[in-house]
Length: 135
Image (tube, rainbow, N blue to C red):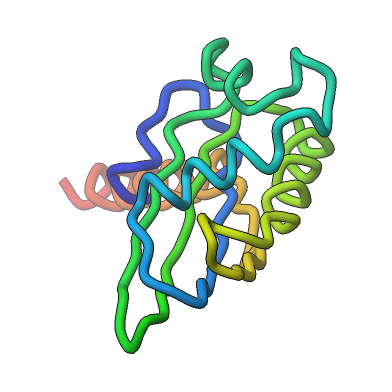
C-alpha cells in the first residue's frame, strides 16, 4: 500500500483511469467529480458531506498531458460499506466532461485495503515465527 492508503479507517480504495480530450489540471478533475455527482443522492451521501464526515478521504489525482489530451488515475479512499463504495465508484464513472472537454472515466478496481493489510500481517507473523524458532 502506498502513502495515500494511510487514511484512518479506510476499508476500500477506488482506483480509476481517465482520458480527457483537452489539457486540464488536477483541480479541474476534482471539481468535475464533485460537480457532476452533486444532486444525484441525498445530502448525507454527497461526496462533500462524505468527506466532511470522514467516510471518503482525499481524492488523489495523477495526470499527464500530451498532444492536447490528459490521462491519469484517480484514487478515492472509502470507509463506507461495499455497496455504498460501489455506488460512489459507479457515480464517478458518469462524469463525462471536465471543464469544456469530453472525458471518460472507468473504474479499474476497488481494493479491499483490509485484506491487503491482513496479508502483510500474516506474512510478517510467519517471518517472526521462523526467526523465533531459529534462535
